[in-house]
Length: 67
Image (tube, rainbow, N blue to C red; front, side):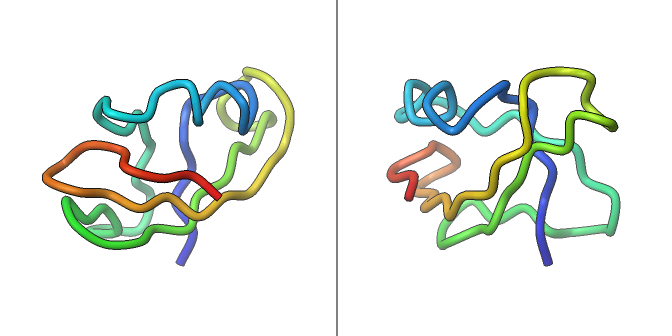
């Protein structure tokens, strides 16, 4: 399942490594404090930036890696 995040671009998401993830949860408990999450930005929902997809690795509630 993919989570929608509130970043205008993947580059901006990468700039927030070490910070909590800003996301919109539509389908219940998708968020994980630890582990990998598949995320995307859907501009028609968030009204910001452009569409992108990324894999985000979380550690203790903070963004550790974006690929």
